[in-house]
Image (cartoon, rainbow over all chains, first blue to last red; front, side):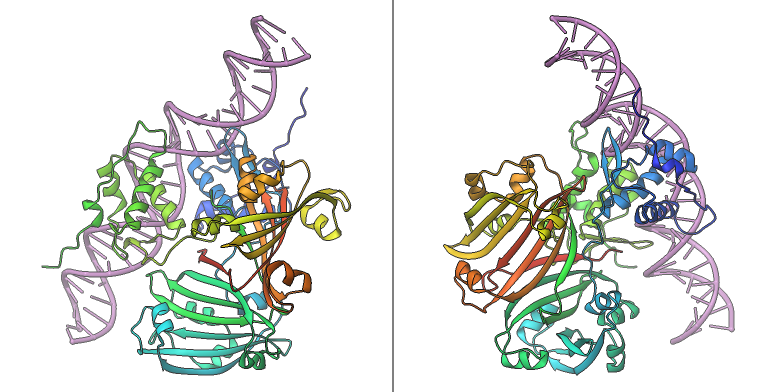
Length: 254
Length: 254
DNA sequence: GTAGTTTGATTGTCCGGACATTTGCATTGA
DNA sequence: TCAATGCAAATGTCCGGACAATCAAACTAC
């Protein structure tokens, strides 16, 4: 007699609230994600078939599929036709997201500090104009900031923004990150194009970051677009590699 | 009389082949993507409502939605309830994918060359064992390669693989990339955890890459997992920043 | 004229079903 | 014993419909 595989979801307390305004598929996917997170669904275990799961919850199969699919897109589950849906052996933290350095540091418990060096309006150089898609020599905001952690400089951030998009208050910039300001101003961030590289520090850069001239620096350039396709920010950042590196998770598009 | 907005999809020749084995939603999404790619669907234009589109193609609305959704996930379209579906103002190239340096170079028309320096089996160090999830001192493959473009060294790649996963033929490694070898060996890549940083070159590193000691180097470490959650590769790479930088597109998870 | 209201258009969610395709396992046959 | 066949299970694809939520524009009232 073959070993009877126990369906883990049977023991799981799954339920949906039909009177709630939050979509049913979302309620389900959140519960499944939580179960995976705290180990109720162990990696590698099968996730019992969709039909029965739908029946037990009183949902339709498309709704259950939508919930499962969202977790597959997050990389938490793997589906195999003819086999079933499996929980991926973790290691999955979170995919690379469009996050600000500020948020990264804050979630790492570093209590970042920001010092605004420059907050002014300048004519756009050719490089900035091309990145933001505005006319050369037209007005753009220029912000230069120094990001500190534990009172040590960590990164030098130079950003350009198109005019009239955002009220750029120096006090607010020191209290939070630029991305958070943009979001609260009603800008829907959509995508960004990034380049990460390295180079030797110039004398000016070295001074700002308390490094020596010629020391290796990690560099990042980014143009960010909102959901209408407008470029809303162009940034040129330099990081001290001893204090910061880019860490992220990628999923294979299949 | 208000200006009559012309629905761009009306002029588009969309059609599906029901006898084809390729899914209908996929046929549609490919045609839409192609139309966006070569400009038949201009950025910012509305993509006429789903219901009518479905009717015109003789498809059901869920099928059309599935096609549209896949393009939304790729960042090519934006949906707004009560408004419609818009083509994103381009700038979108491709999202960050789990690609090999080899493929990157090849698609840039650089005809990369690879020189295998080391291809052997060694006992796993603590670091390697932790990354691959194997016992310390157990056997692992070790590969060291030098990647060249235009006869100039560009990157030094050091990789560790668990044993028995792959036949590692030196000739094959020089002819193509490691990732392509893994895929053709039937390994389904799923996700990877990466760290990108910078540091000064040691004397040995400088010699390998034809740089000077202390010159800035771009570094990348990566652990790759297949869809069963096994770690299938751990790599430590160093790049010459004058020859290579990481360039990619991110989408905001919403 | 301006502010608030209605209304039409469009996507979001959800249902219940049908059949196809793939996989793994058990059975059968040589 | 081993290979080929058949079967059951699971996900993949697709349909047609229903109602809800949201947004923008037209409309109305002041």
